[in-house]
Structures are given as C-alpha cells and as structure tokens.
Length: 418
Ligand code: C6P
Image (cartoon, rainbow, N blue to C red; front, side, top):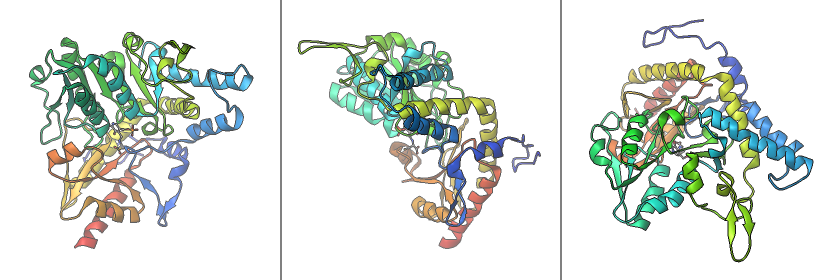
C-alpha cells in the first residue's frame, strides 16, 4: 500500500513495520486509556524482545562472572560477552575488535578519553575544540580538563538554521589544538554534521578527534575507517539496547599508549605492593566486574539493527521526518527550532505563548510521549533564544499515523491556552 505524503512524494511502503513494532513489548500498551505513541527515542529507544530475552537468558541460564571462573557457566558468559566485541566492531567498521571498550555510556566514553589521553596531551595554553551544538556530555568533561590543565575551550559556531559554520575551521584549528570533539548528530535539533570535514581539518594539525555518535548509531551506518576519527563513543540504550552500557572505540595504537583510568580487578596483569602491570587493550580500560548482561543485550541490539538493516531504517525514518516537518509546518503558532540542511530523526519546536513543559504535560495526556526541556544542550538553547523546546524524535517503529496523533495533541494544547 503506497500513500501520498503531505510533501507530495509517494511513500515507499514499509511492509514489515507491523512486524517490527510487534517486537517491542513496551509499545503494546495504553497510557491514559489510549495506545501509547512513543516519540522520545532520542532520550532512549524502546527495546525489542530479542534484547530483553538475551538479558533475561543471561540471568536465568548462565549468570556468572566473566574472565575469572574456570567453571562452565563462567566460560559461557565470557564467550558471549567477548563475542559482542567483534559484532560491535563490524557495526562501526572497526578493523580490530580489541579496539572496542565497553563503558557505561557515551558520557563515560568521553570522560575516559578526557581523563587519559586528554590529560597527557593537553597542557597549559593548549586548546580543545568542540561545537556550539554539543550535548553537555561533550562539553563538561572538556571544560573540566581545560580548567585543570590551564587550557582553552574553543567552540565551532552555528548559524540560525542549526548548521555548524565550517568555513573558518582553518583559524579555529591551530597548532595549539590538541583535541577536537564533536557530535555526529545534534540531539536537540537533529542536524547531521559534516564531521568528516572537521576530522580531516583536525588531522592536518595533529589533533586527536572524538566523535559523539550517541544520536547517529541507530539511524545511519557509522564507519570509523571512513570517518578517519581517533575515538567514537555511543550508548546502548539509544540503539535498542539496554541502559548502563556503552562503547568507546579508539584507534588501537592510541589505546595501547594510553594509561588506564580506573584501577581494580580485571584490568591488571600482575599486582604487588611495589608495582602493578596492566592487562592489554581493551581490558585495561574495563576495571571491575563489567555490565555483563548489558553487553550481551547490546549484542542482541546489534543483531536487531542488522536484521532490519540500515537501508530500511534510513528510508523509513527519513520519510517520517519529512512528513512530520510538513505537518508541523501547517500548525499555526508553531515554530520549528533549527532548519539544518541535513536532519536526522529529531524535530524541535515551540508553541507561541506556551511553555514547552506545559505543552509536554498536555501532550502526554493524549498518550503521546515527547521530551520538553533544554535537552542537555543549554548553550544551544541560548543560541536560539529559547529556554527549552518540545522535541519529537523518531525510530524505526514509529508510524505515519503517529504523526497525525502528535499534531492533534498539539492542537489540543493550543485549545487549552486559547
Ligand atoms: N541524550 C537526549 O534526550 P548518555 O546519557 O551517556 O547515554 O548519553 C549522553 C548523550 C551524549 N551525546 C548526545 C548527542 C546525546 O544525545 C546524549 C543523550 C539524551 O537527548 C538524554 S539527555
């Protein structure tokens, strides 16, 4: 069945959408007496049964610690845990699975880099470059590092559309620039940045580069070889995986040179009171008992992404976003915040004279889940001159009918304040 969208383009039918949706138990419920419409996947995506079952089966069938026991359960857990590294490596086209470090989240991955190689490379008077559109997770760790080392935090500006201004990179990246850390996709307004251009400019000056891929990883194929970056961080929970698990990928030769950041069990080779020697990469960065269930669930999430396929994901989500933009543009009194040249999955907007939090509460009464707030991007909100926005974010399980439900919930908000 192929229908026409408000943009006038014919819609490619997404035949398996019902099947994909049926795999998400949390979507099969009513909120306030109506079918839940979940448009907050940028905050965290819902989880398919295969992820929930993978976590469940670890706890029910082979719960044990990894890398320690000689018993069968521990060997099973270790082999499933370690089996996720190559899966993640293939997902991001990393040449070496041992360059995949399991972290708690994107936030932890960025902090790890700032506190290890960041500390050793950034000195007094040096510079760290981020962008005006970063999530706080890619601002605060660098700010802390700069304060500690007497370095300077510089910022790539953005324009009124929510696109980064990249024509002055030559003066922003100098011999003093030691780290360049930017997001791939803005969580607040949805811009897909030209990170390759930024990475290549940084490399010519010898700066290390980190890409925050939190909002990219479940929407587009991410390829670290093609990007040419040194580090890439993302969270499992935004890619249909569990909370509390993330990945930091790093160029193996850099990881090998870096010191560990947390000490404890599992990251050592030998310990005596005089001296400790460390395990190899990646284990030297994974101190203590890891989130074993989280890693196993993450592996199932990678399988889910591969099963659906990025071609399908991109085609479906880009149609949803185009249709939502067209519908929202027709709503009187609604202003879209940010009109970037390349947008992924996220639309932010405000309603005339109505605080986003009030709007969000009323929209929830219509069983539509959106996020209202500053989206952990306070400098960007300041740039747009708003304290907060209402944000709708889309994932592969969303439907065209849900856009209709969102717009009618917005009309109800307006009616309350009329
Ligand atoms: N953004 C959102 O609603 P953690 O919390 O570590 O899993 O992810 C942090 C993070 C880092 N970078 C970007 C671009 C992000 O979007 C996020 C998380 C959520 O937009 C929660 S604030």
